[in-house]
Length: 400
Ligand SMILES: Cc1cc2nc3c(=O)[nH]c(=O)nc-3n(C[C@H](O)[C@H](O)[C@H](O)COP(=O)(O)OP(=O)(O)OC[C@H]3O[C@@H](n4cnc5c(N)ncnc54)[C@H](O)[C@@H]3O)c2cc1C
Image 1 (spheres, rainbow, N blue to C red):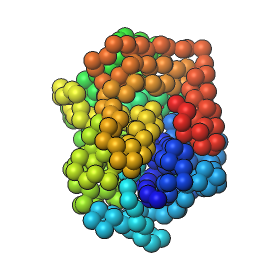
Image 2 (cartoon, protein in one colour):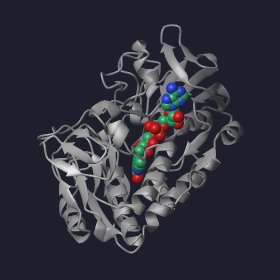
Image 3 (tube, protein in one colour):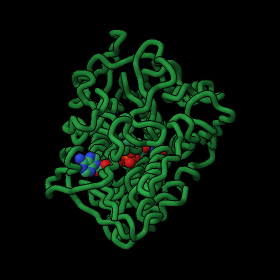
């Protein structure tokens, strides 16, 4: 019996754990460690600040489903790993493994610039999304300028764009749009770069949206400082702001940075090959955001990263599971797919509108890439949420 310990039970980790158990059956014991009892469909957090979703609508307790599927769940905070003794230390005790899969996602680097943590809002966790809801309710009583965007070194620009267009729609619904100067700031070289060097027609589509919704924008800017009532850009321009939402950079979580054995990159990501196996430690694997991804482009002026979105997180979870099963059978022909060669499948919400972003590869060169706007209703975004929550609740990890 091989014991695999998966740390992190979200897009990547839940998929990896379920797939190892499903395909490995009685020969594999799988222990999933997560500090949260919930599976949360993170993409829908963009709707929580506007009351379009409650956290309960987009999450479920994962333990029961995992138990049914034969995966042991340990609700615990993993603190560090010793790769020589093959023991993970958690706040609930030590756990021994034969194979370890790191799927711990990101930590937010708030200290990217002074004031980012104190004076800007973030929407990437349930707590932060609820705080943002409260701040918008207060803002409504006394509206003024708004700044939304991503800081230097950020990679998750898509979610910030989504929030921008949802705020714009919400302002109109509240009948206060005319009182608000709305500005988008981004380190991207151009609108719609998204950290993947854009898509055909992407820049012109985003420019058309900005003009249609009367949103000012600055590209190739970083954030020097955020204060209570302004955002100071790397260009020294000062933008007045009564409400600021910023997407800061992501780095590796404390579990990774507190485990020198993992030989993580300076940003706290796990160096893996195209088979998602650690480059130096054969029984350590990583999937999802925890993986180090090298950029195929160099930002021109201000640094920014690449988005590590849900689809590749799920895919790398599957690849990791398949490869662990092959290794335990003594096989050496591991399945390989570089992060940038995974298809790009994403839906950008634009406030009850949406844009479908589809390509055969995340990174260039691509043979196929298309952006399709749907200005009637965000039906695909809503359907994807329902589908993914259904799939995960059932534990159907083999589905796309
Ligand atoms: C606001 C927002 C909107 C987004 N929208 C989209 C979108 O529209 N489409 C899309 O494709 N992607 C989107 N993404 C990205 C998507 O959410 C990520 O790609 C996905 O969540 C990555 O999955 P993951 O499993 O790698 O990491 P995560 O989902 O971050 O999960 C990490 C897990 O590890 C656990 N964990 C961390 N540290 C420990 C520890 N020490 N001990 C135990 N457990 C631990 C956490 O509790 C968590 O469950 C969005 C992200 C954000 C923030």
